[in-house]
Image (tube, rainbow, N blue to C red; front, side, top):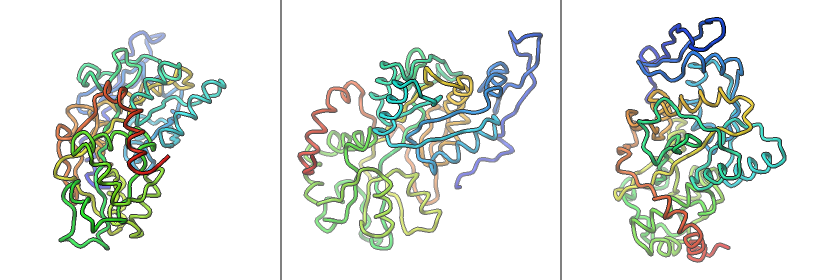
Length: 356
């Protein structure tokens, strides 16, 4: 994996500390990395006693792998990671919760409004304030700690370099509206989750109000999710596809003829938000997990996958082929507008692309 962290510099420095309030003055290990306390001795002891965490996440295994590996190394906990796209994950979490069978300790979505809905219906709602709470932007956390933004993921352009010549590489969102790309573009549906609603809202609000109609005129192939779209891009069945940098990076490292382009106008960066479930079988392991991901350590590791960590002191992703801009250059939709416009934008998009 590119941009591997020097384990000698960032490996968790675990010190013996007196755990305040622990019975009989027992000692436990606190998790401290480069002077940043991620978990107290008390929390570490309780999390280790639980032994594992069960995560329902929208983040694909290939993208979660670096963070998962580092978290296990730092904490010694077992991690069970179940990946689904947002609509399916939301349906599974709510149905299991209603039936009294929700086993997840942590649930996240790519739609912040759905994450808030999970709090309203009781799936989430176990308040926990992480050590970095005050350093995080107010919009990236619930005021009580019921949910957090864990990271932000851009949606950019993936290009098959075996079928697209260097001179024809698109540099902007408007470049792919050239008639030569008709029938050669892949995109997910706006119904594929918050990530895709967010990406299309960006194109409509920031590029041009009629961008959807212009893109629809190119007769793109529309997919239910990212995975089959990426597969067609790799096979050359499409030349260009909307996708996350992390997915493209994985293929570059595997030797596939693809690259990723940040269009010159900019790009959207959707938030993955989540929280600890009210039924968590391993609540302290879940607290440790959210502490870790919102720390500088966790946010730095997650950047290895081409994802922007939430901690303000963490660096942006980097890669020898793909140039990542600072997160300040990426667009995020105001949540009040998202709530207000979600239904009308979805209807408008379906009409533009002829999707029911």
